[in-house]
Image (cartoon, rainbow, N blue to C red):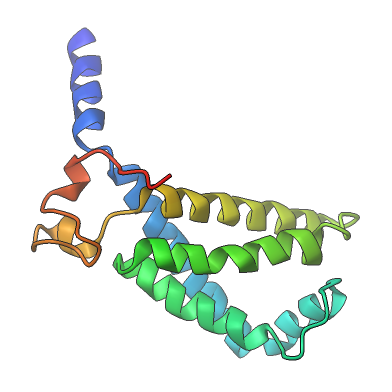
Length: 161
């Protein structure tokens, strides 16, 4: 049993980027799917924005939300410009938390939306702080787009904070 625990600890130490990579891919695929959903069901996004107590802006934020989810989701899932893609999602999640769901916590749907937006904000923050590796580094094909070296899955995460 001690040998098994020792082997598990050794694996965790040598594969410390795996959890962040899983989070990056999960967030990217989920955002891309949400972007497609909002693109096909624009009225749902418009209803959320209409019920939110957003500050006055001279333009609709719906195209930004849809585009950021689609492009950012693809970039995150592919491991390209991970920190930038995650950072550009954070204002959307903050807006969802602060304006769309915070004042409407009377329904189960609003509470679930609040919790999900909070989780996505937190995960995006982790990716901004620690990165999430890149496809090139995962496949061992050379440096990733942000300068990750080969075998970055086997290295310690680098925090920018």
